[in-house]
Amino acid sequence: MIRVNLLPHREEKRQALRQQFYALSGLVAVLAAFIWFLGYSFINNLIERQVEKNNFLKSEIAVLDKQIEEIKKLKEQTESLLQRKQVIESLQANRTETVHLFNELAKQLPSGVYLKSIKQEGQKVTLAGNAQSNARVSALMHNLDESPILERPVLIEIKAAQVGKRRMSEFSMNVHFSRQTSEDAGKVATKAGKGKS
Image 1 (cartoon, rainbow, N blue to C red):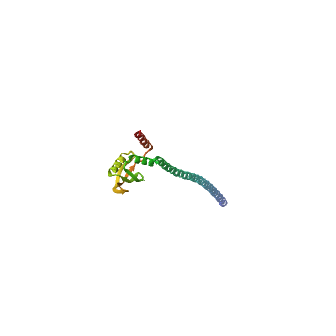
Image 2: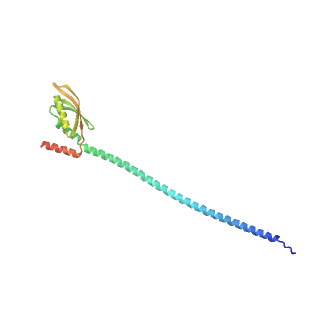
Image 3: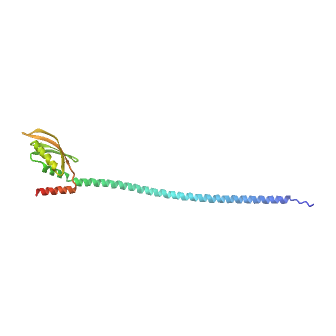
């Protein structure tokens, strides 16, 4: 019987398997490192893109914020200008108001009635004066009630008073002045013109 010594052959096989194992382990490690590097690069690339997008959005938001501030300033300026315009329009519309008031009072004042003071607070006009009799005060109230721009006369007080050597009736009353639009003022002026002719 032939005896074969297999120990060296087994040892060589083990060594070959070991080297193969180490080679495969190294290859797997290199492959794992490569895959990790690819994943890391891909994720970093995604993060950089997202950071760029975020920075772009921040810059655009800053631009929009500036535009919003400018729009707010423009709105404030517009509101301020509109308020000034309204004030100017109201002044223009009511600049002849006092003239109309005095003209109308002069027209409606009956003889024997003398005004001492006229005070206007908004729409309310307070008249104070003297009359030769109570009937003259009543005539004044009737005339004011018939006026196109004066309305709702209310007698506050009437009393007897001595003016010089004459006995008079001292009175005070409130009457409301209706604001005129430019069309109303034109109508009043036309009626006054027709009444004179």
